[in-house]
Amino acid sequence: MGEEKDLLSSLLLELRRGTQTISVLSQMKEPKYGYALVQSLEEKGVAIDPNTLYPLLRRLQNQGLLESKWETSGAKPRKYYQRTEYGTKIYEQLKTYWENLSDGIGRLLREEET
Amino acid sequence: MTPNEKELMKRYIYQVTRRLSKAQRDEVRMELEELISDMFADKGSMEKALTQLGDPAEFAKQYQNDRQYLIGPEYFETYLWFVRVVLICTAVPILAVSLVHAFGHVSVFTSQNAAPVIIRAIVDGLTTGITDALISCVSAFGAVTLIFAIMERQKVKIEMKKAEKWSVGKLAEHKKTAESRWTPSFLEPVPDKKAIISRGDSIVGIVFIVIFCVLLISAPQFFAVIFTENETVKTVPVFNLEQWGYILPVFVLSLLIGLADEILRLVVGCYCKLVMISNIVCGAIQIVLSVVVLKVLPIWNQNFVSELQLALEDETSQTTKFLSLWNADMVSNGLLTFIVLITLFEIGVTIYKTLRYGVSIKNH
Image (cartoon, rainbow over all chains, first blue to last red; front, side, top):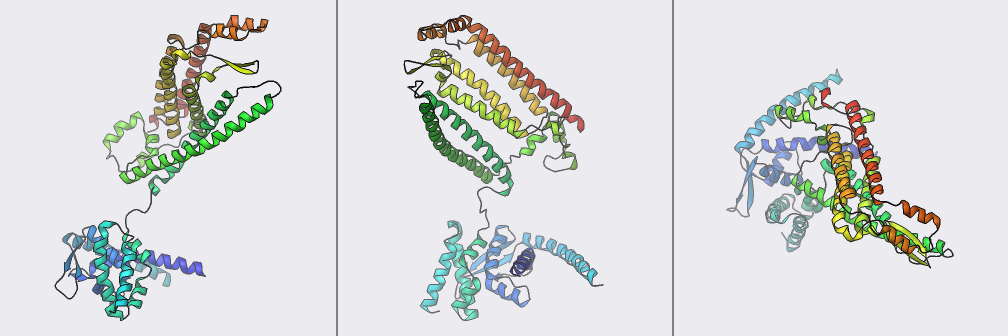
């Protein structure tokens, strides 16, 4: 029983991990700070844990998909992330790919129901 | 935020950042201060916020996207194989040489105490041998690991498979195709069972060459006629130890060339043009060097006969007969013939197996 649960959670983790980049990129047209992104993703039903999201944002920045800026004018310093031009280009391609994949998977899953 | 909550946050951030590289630390600390205070404002409790973030060690792991291993999966198989071969080729010769040395130090032995003295020598040899072998194996293991770790860091591409694929004909082919793009034409024909070179044979060959090399370098005096007289061991060396400084390098060079050939066979693992060419070239050089060692250089102890006669004061008719037969020239010629025949035989076998079963260009 425990094993089944472990297997399921590791499979789910894998499945989620693949979708995290595209989820984050989709929200980054306008500058956003980390926790606002956590909340907006959660509201839209695609929650990403903060301890996954923050390192992911850094990675995407290192890959040149996002750029960041510290905003120090407010009550406390906040780091705002935004998609770069390159990030937008990659995001568009990911989006097309995702839509095809999602259609395909949808067809596969419906096949069994009929 | 109470001072207590602030303290908790500081502790949490410290636990994450201390696991990160120096370059990351400051930035991540600021990010986490922002995140945790946001979460605190949202949840209303530091306890809740930090519980949701979870184990700081796990959090830190997410930041460490760089490699967390010394030798990655790309090299691991090659590494394991290499370590095994190097350990065998280190331990076996050291044990053997230690045993030989132990016997060399046996000083007194008579017919009465022969057994205990010999046992003692074996035990001594084994003790020092095992100790030395262990120490050397640890160093060898460390050296191999270090080399592979450096290769991993530098992403040096050494692929053993590449060596297998290489053949003269391939050179032209490689230029035509974009070098790294794999196509089905890269597929090698499955080697015939008889074309596969036994790894065991290669390793045994390497071990023997290393043992011989080490003995020639460290203890040429052990190649000698050893006998006991008046409870002391007397030795009459076979080699010309006075000129050893000239002879040894040539001797060792010849062995090293043989060693290189064996190692190539071990790495490539089957008969192909590369192995054949290497075998022919190395064999030829070894024959030439053997001629130099045996016919040109004064390898033999020129006073062998007289020293032996002097040592054997109570010569019997048999020993006199043997001594009268000792003729350095004849021994040289005999050995040379033997070496040439063996080498030619090996080259012959290699050529035959390569042409008959080897992975050759005609298959492409």
